[in-house]
Length: 151
Image 1 (cartoon, helix red, strand yellow):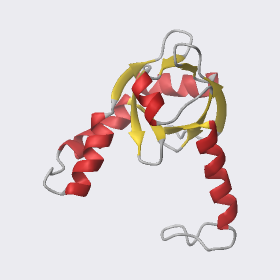
Image 2: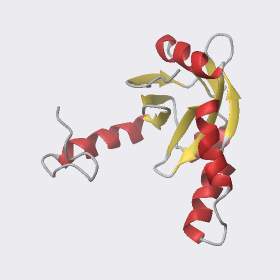
Image 3: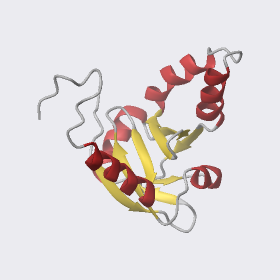
Image 4: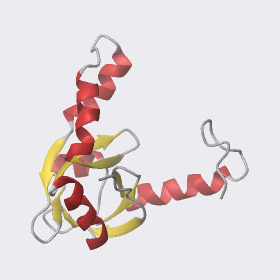
């Protein structure tokens, strides 16, 4: 079963650093992963949230990257080194480890943003900045691979 995660939801971090995954997203995550998830850091100061089965090909590919190439080693170090296996509890809460919250600059509010096969989780300030960048792109044209996109 292939599910596409889309949409953006504003969420609150509770005092223990947990978010409640919205029901529409929670049901889809459970369907593809049984609630087994992986959180890791993204270089744009957000977190990536994958259903565990979707993360595994990325993990396997990253684990084979040579540490002799410094750029590849940095990416491997950040993505694999910060990856954490997590499980939603029975009410759909997901704990975000303090280390990841700090690296992603999270405060009280965060945004869960669907990206097809996974989610990004942004701080409120980070998500606002992403929206501003989008609006400033204006008529600059589409990047390679999206030239034929029609909206």
